[in-house]
Every structure is written in C-alpha cells, then in structure tokens.
Image (tube, rainbow, N blue to C red; front, side, top):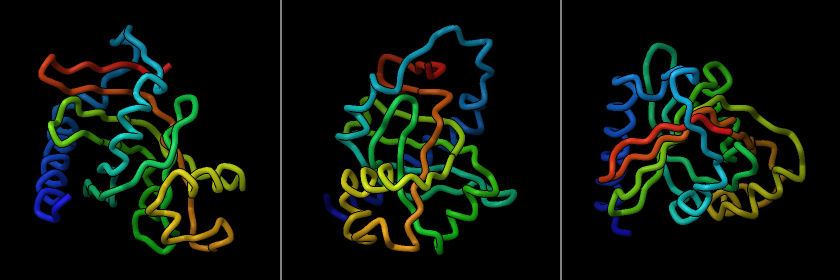
Length: 171
C-alpha cells in the first residue's frame, strides 16, 4: 500500500471514529439494544485487515493511533504495545476504547468498543506475537521487558456499510 493511500485511509478512519463517538453510537446502553452478536462472526474482517485505528482518551482529549490486531478469542480482541509508549499509560488510566478497521472499499467498517485489560499470561503473549508480524519484528520475544499485551473486552460491535449502521451487544 502506498504511503499516501495509507494516510488517506487513516484520516478517514479517524473521521469515522470521531463522528460516531460524538454522535453517541458507542455509548448506547445495552438495555436499549436487544440484538447481540459474537466477535467470532467478525474475525475474518479483523484478520484480513489487521491494521486499524484505536481511539482512546489522553486526559480530557480524545486520541487515535494506528494499532495492529493480533488475534481474538471469545469476546476479546488482542493487541500489543510497548510500556514506554504514551498509549500504554493512557490505556491504564482510561481503559475504555474503540477500535476500527476496514478494507480499502470501506465495506464494511468494523468498530469494537469496550474496556482494555492487560495480560501477563506467557501463552497469550506468545500467541499475540506469533499472530502479529509488526509486533514480532519489534519485540522479537515475550522476554522483551517493553512488551505489553492487552485485549479489548468487547461490549459493542458496530458495523457500518452501504446497508446501514448496525450496533450489537457482544455476547
């Protein structure tokens, strides 16, 4: 992918996320939405489009950054970061996030919203590295003291496409 295309996709993703955050889609109470879906129904999208945008809080500000998906299990989507990256401290302080990914055609856009949980399990860390080429190149081993693995405990799954917007409670 050309750098210009990547930047354009990243900007579009940020606009999607901020638009939906400000419209309040990600904060709808579960009691209002009787529809549920499992994250396993969307693993294909996550695996095909591993690079996405993570939206989180940095104090009073909202922030987005590129994040690479590692793997999913149950309603948990796993990612890697580094302990010396500002996003690590932000996620510890403000664990509610939204992650968005999509193909070049933007059909569909998948957004996962939930709470971040950091893990220390060596098996999970190994799997996160093995399924994330970017993390493997940078960390090389689970012994790297900077490696931090976390999952989003998905509460809401949102799909945006030409067919409409669909918001589901994760089951």
